Amino acid sequence: EILTKYGRIMNDKKNELGRVLRKAIDSGQLLYEGELKPTSSLINELKDLLKEKVIPGHYTEITYTTATSKDIDGVLSGPQNTLKTIRLDDDHRVFNDNGELIETHKIISPVIEYLEEDQTGETLLEKFSSPPYGWTPETIIYSVACLIRGGKIMVNNSDYYGKADVHKALKSVSEFKKARIRRSVVLKPSDKQYLMDIINPLMDDGKLSLQSPRSEFIARALDGLKRLYRTLEELKGKMEELGAAVNWELDKTKGLINLLVGGGHDCLDKLLEERTILRELKEIADKTEDFLKKNYEKIKKQRGFLKDIDGEIAKKEFDDGQSEELSALVKEYRDTLPSIASFGTDLDGIFEKLRNTYKGYFNPVHNERDRLLSEIEEYLDSIREERNQLGKRAADQSWFKAPNSPCNELEIRFSTKCEHCHIGFREAVLEIASLKGKLEGLKASYEKFMEERPVTTPPPVRRERLKLKRRLTYLQLKRELEKLTLNDNTEIEIELED
Image 1 (cartoon, rainbow, N blue to C red):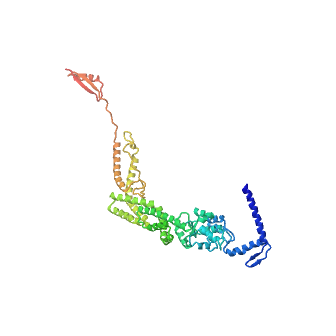
Image 2: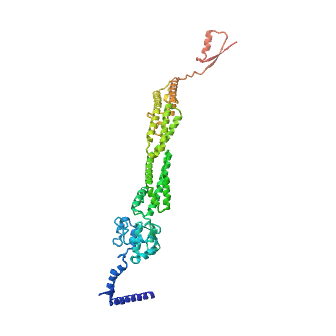
Image 3: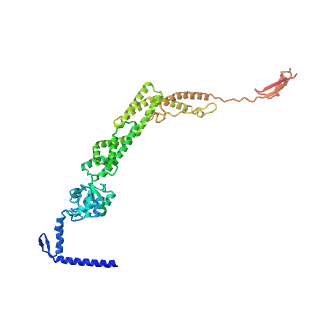
């Protein structure tokens, strides 16, 4: 209550003092530069005089308006195409229609000139709030924000306007006083364009622009070169796996990466010097990726086919002329492999010639195998329903076994075996001999099968005893035999009486 009471008293005293001063001024006279100024309202005339003559005479570079914290946020956060509309008054419109910084502007060029040496925010406030400038703290901070947005200065060792540390340093007067501010190494627009032509193709996203600060050029270049180096290393490994001889200048890429990591003042200059090599390496990477995408698996299969051909030659089933021709084509293919990194070889043509040559040698053998298989198949079909005298059917017998069906068409792709019947050259040669024997064996088995007859079982043997006198008539003998049950197999045991 006491504070409130005394607050009212102080406010009343202030108002009273204002009235007294105004009355005293209005009762006086206005004298400026030795000239007495007539006036009806001295206080208003004094205001106009200060505004129109005293202040402009003392602060020749003063601005008639001030920037705001909202303007500063807009410069640091807005897209480039909005920079020209952040402030439209002449005192603060420092970006042209393209969003580029106007370096000759009245609140820009003096700051650039003053930053010949490193400064702090506090020294900038002191310098540009004093005559002949008289800028407000907000206008001074706005000028610094525009300079870092234009890539001309560094704030707290960063030239990227989007960093949180930069935003914090330009957020308030107290933070700004502690900020360290210095000029950055400014890249010429032509150099920036050259660097963009080198770096942007290496990036998937986050492309550089002419407004990007030097630090971002270094960061993006480093990221892009590391990515290019990794890509080339991976591609080199795959090409060498296929048998290619790769001679890419990767050491220069590695050297540039190390240089950019150091962030030296001339690192981007070195990058520009090597731009031709970097452009060539990027083209090589693109071509190699496309080549491997189309040919990597195919060449691996082709190499597998060559290995199979080596195996077939080693089995010595080809005649000497055939082996020599196949060996020569295999050698030509392998001798061409190291050159595929130049993308000008006819590897596919050599492989096709090798495959067709092998197929040409294999085809007659494959046809002979098919002929024998067809003959066996036709023979078995012809006797399938035949029965022998025991009523047995030929098709039900254990020897009645059909081999594989004929293939009908030889197809060779990336294996020395036919794609349809899965048999190779030597296997087919061996099978032909086996099939010839099988046909003869089938015919012999069939003949034996048809010769089978029914087996007749003789009646059981009967045994009879017959007791006879040593001397008897035929009639007596006949009567004794009639007493017995006889058949053709009856055995008669005769006992003679003494």
